[in-house]
Amino acid sequence: MSEEIVIDDRAGKPPRSWDFFLTVLLLLMLLVMTGVFVIAGFGFGVRTIGCGDSAGACDHDLISFGSLLAVAGTPLVAIAGVVVSVVWIARRKLSFLIPVVAIAVSVLVFLAGSWMLDLAVPA
Image (cartoon, rainbow, N blue to C red):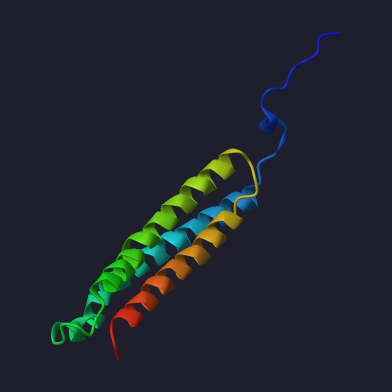
């Protein structure tokens, strides 16, 4: 007649090995892509060489913000994606979608930084 009180609701859920391995694979892809984006973001300085000759033609604040977005924004998205994925794996939730969303957001952040740099440097 003693009833057992279940406090941890994770005990009843079996682990999904396919979800874990797919999440790890996608997180590795996210980290490699983030490294490529950071290196490419540092290369944005080459695109601003034409701004040295003309003082008023380039928007230096937009150049700074676009470069910062590409260099620092993509790692921040990757860190957030890794942390949320680990938490969801620990809670046994379906977690492979988190790196997919992080990859998409990271690409959009990098493209936004590149677009700002294109706007700031006249052709």
